[in-house]
Length: 494
Image 1 (cartoon, one colour):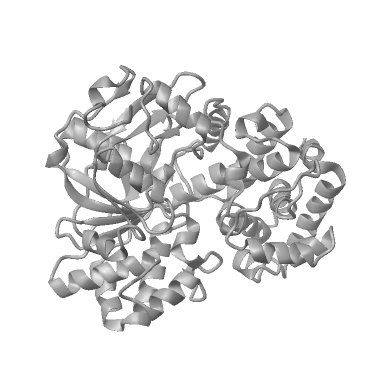
Image 2 (tube, rainbow, N blue to C red):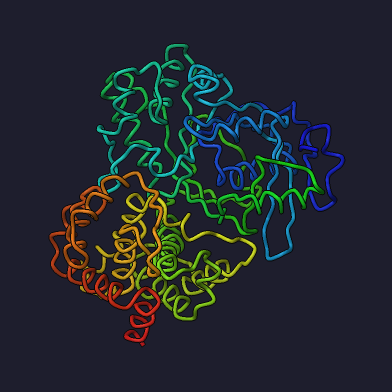
C-alpha cells in the first residue's frame, strides 16, 4: 500500500493528516529545489498554517535538474508526502498536503516550469538549490560567468537551465503580461542569501537585457532567511522506518528529520506573504546576525566534526559525540573561536552551543559525516574562513579553525586515516584531484590547495600567519591522525 488520498484513513494513529480542504489552496509559492530540507522545513510551516489558521497558500514544487524520482513519487501519491521526526526510537509523523502542483524541468519541460511561475497568484519564488545552484563565486558573492549553466542561459535565454535563468525568464514574461513581480526568497545556507540571489539574478539579467534588469531592481525583493533543521540524507533503512511509522505504508517521497526547527525571515515581500509568525517563524528587519550565528556555530562545527570525524573513522555525527575530545573541541570551537566573531546581540551563545551539542547527540538522526563533508569548496568560506579573517584582523588565535581547514585539506586528499579511499563529492572535485595528484604530501599540498582563489580569495594565501597555522595543523594530522590531533590541540588549549 502506498500513501495517497484514498489511503490516508489507514494511517497509524501516530501520524497527523491534513485537516483542511486541499482544493482551497492556491498556488502562491513556486519552490525550486524539492529536496530533503525543503520537505522537512518550509513546507511543514505552510502545512501547519493551513491546518491551524486556514491559510490558502499552496506550493508548486519544482526540481530543475536531478531529483526526478521525488517529483514522480509526489505525483503518484496525489501530491502528498510524510515528514517523520526522529528522536532516538520515538518517531512521530505528519502528512503534508500543501503541494498543489509538481514539475520537473527535464521530464515536464522548462516551459511548464516557467508557466507555473507566471501564474497570476504566484507571489513568492523560493529556493533550496544548495550553494552550487546559485552559480556564484563564494569569495565574491558574484555570478560565475564560466559556469556551464550560465553560459547556456546567456546563449539560450528563453530555455534556461539555471535557477537564476529560470527566475529571470519568468519575470520577463510577467513584465510583458503586466503581471506584478514576485519576491525571490533564498532558503539556502549561504551568508546573506538574499543578497547572493539578488546579485546573481541582476548580473545575469544585465547581460541579457539592461531594461529588464532595471525593472527587476525596482520591482522584485530578495529577502534573506536563516533556516535550521538537521535533515539527514535518506537511506533504505530510514525509508523503512518511515513506513513503520505510517503503519506499513510506503512513501518514497517521505523524509525524516530532527524535532528542532527554526526559521528567521527578513520581512521584505512585494506581493504579500503567509503569516509564518503564527507557526513559530521569526520575521525580522535584519537576518544577518542570525545567519552568522548559525553558519559559524552550527554549520562550522558540523563541518569540523565531519572532516575530522570522517578521517578518524566516525561515520555519523552522534559517534563523534561519544569521543570526549571531539565534544570538547566542538564546544571550544563554537564558544572560543566562532562566537567572538559574531554580531549577534541578546542571545546566550554558550547556551546555544550547548543546545547544538545536545542535538548532535540525537542517536535517531544518523547524520552521516560524509554528507556534511560534501561541497566543501562552497561551504568553507562562510563556515570557517570568514571567522579566520576576523581573528587575523584582531590578532587573536584560531587553532581549532586552522585544524578544521587542515582537516578539509586532508579529507580532499582522498584517503582517510585507515588508508581507505574517500569518495569526494564537490563541484570542484576534478580540480581538487588534479591539485592533490600534482603536489607532495605536507606543506606542498597546503600550498597547492591554497591556489583555489574561489575558496580562499587572494588575501588568505598571502597571509604568512594563516598559511603557517594551517600548515602546522596539516602536519599534525599527517603525523598523528585526526583523533590524536584533536586530542593534542584540546590539550594545548587547556
